[in-house]
Amino acid sequence: MKILKLSLIFLFIFSFNNLMANNEVINSKITKNLRCLICQGQSVYDSDSEFAISIKTLVDKKLEEGFSENQIYDFFKEKYGDWILYDPELNKNTYILWLLPILIFLIGGAIIAKTFIIKKNN
Amino acid sequence: MKNKLLPIIITSLFIIIFIFFYEGLKNSNIYTPETKINIKVPSFDGELFYEKKIINSLELFQVDKYYLLNIWSSWCVPCRQEHSLLMNLSKDKNIELIGINYKDTKIKAKIFLAELGNPYKKIIFDDKGIIAIEWGAYGVPESYLIKDGIIIKKYIGPLNKTLFNEINYLTK
Image (cartoon, rainbow over all chains, first blue to last red; front, top):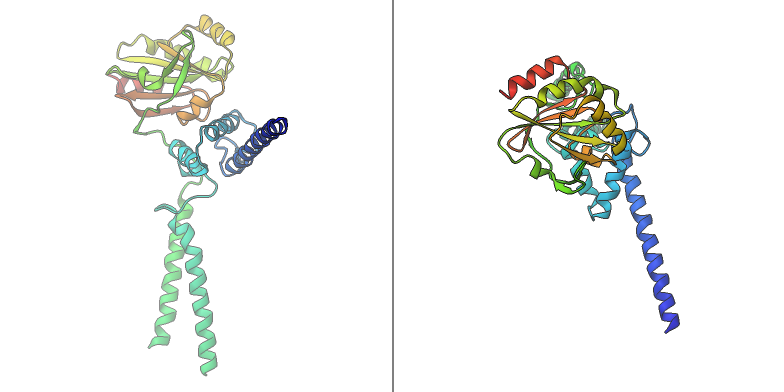
């Protein structure tokens, strides 16, 4: 019985620590992808400005409340717009940004292939 | 015919891309936050400064009149500059002022208000700065003009005479 109690306590402490560590990892991942809007070229994670500190606290609070990573991004996007995210999502404003490199790559590939085929045929 | 068509397509495609990027160069790359916003007042719970009770933000903006929500702090120098304008606005019956005390201590905030006057009908105490983020604020001071639970204008930085006149004009 004593062993059972002890192991339960250990399990509880271990799972609690694990949970805390998990939240910390997600927090740093999220804050690294959030732009500090009042700083120059710094993420929220890197900055110690009042704005960044508030955001870090709020991310912690949201994680404790059970918000997922994407829900937290959506929350900040609603408040500050897409600019706050370093990694912009694919939407009507950003589709050119995402698709143009692929398009150029495909066209380039087609040109090279075409040239080779023409040369080979000749 | 096929061999002639391909270079024309490629050249025109590159010209289109060039024009597209060239036009893009003219766009300002300085980030300017949106100030004309028609979004709903955020819903959150906050502690009232004097009453020490928790209140939901939506309860503050029920009456059918204009509200100016002002984020301020005793340590913020521009807040001192705009305070006389806020005192003038508080005399206007069309508008009600709500304050958010940002990352401050109650003692210092009370000294600030005792010295310069209290223009606010209600003050929410935001010692961690979380409530300001709910409003999409960047720092202090910042003000939001609200009508019928909708934020109609956002003022980043201290209010000046021109903005004061604008608020007066909008709330008439």
